[in-house]
Length: 413
Image (cartoon, rainbow, N blue to C red; front, top):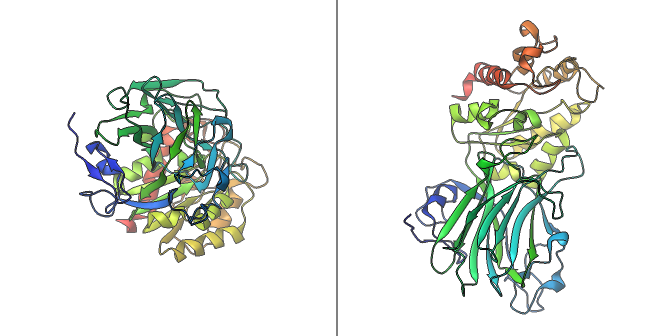
């Protein structure tokens, strides 16, 4: 494999030419314009005279402590059980985080993972873990973690051409591309790099393997002290449509990601991004708007599909619409799909009652209730032929939903 040296503005060097399509114009020389936007960034060497950071640490929780900064100005990794949590949403199917790290010995294990939210987004505890194993000169992806050391499956790749004895500076990257978790390590000095994708492993509920859920975490598992010099996360920008919603937007319980209605529409429209989260409620979308994730996408349209997991609040939906308008996008609030018993998962409302509220909103929408109701009756329950379980559509139903979206929203072409 041939490599081309690409210099980032913060001085880090990336050399794997395959990473070009993941980078933002201005961050990597020669990248296509408008591909990426900085979602958040920390330069841990940016210190005031008293040794405290000049950057905002309010989003860093867990093991982060200003007193942990050493005289060289780098942020030390603290240990697996005390992982540092960056409280910025990481629920996006096309996102990556990149860091320059300095080692003191080639014997440590560093990792990127994720920390599940405890409010307003269900109780999922699965998440991928990308591990940079310098001792054994390997790159691993684990498909599940309980937040400690337990993992149920992993794939690995030899990284000996990158992790070279005597070389202590590396650029490590982890993220999701088309929902699949990947990891990359590049040797800062030689330019060699390797990338590992999670395509080869799966977990029982979420296929393909592993997810980064909610908040990014970074940590050191073992070995001699390592330091994180900087940390930047990038997301697509200038997208046509940003899809956000719950597990039906995420597309769980499907044989492949490509089967989901969102994936089909991303292929149809081009230049789209999705942020689906199992168990999500309206508050999840509110938080993503307030946090800046949706604004970072710079979307033309924001497609919201939510209401299956709660008693829907008109006030929240109206707030979501106004916030979408504030970021310069056009809101789309879709009717939710029918279920086996015609009720939401919490049973407080029927699906028809949820959609009656949505239909009162003066916005664009796709009538997923028509696409999924028996004989296209929006008030009828979904037939078993279109459901994977009592709530989630199967692959055939996702195709119906994608076609319905295109039919109702032909103005988007």
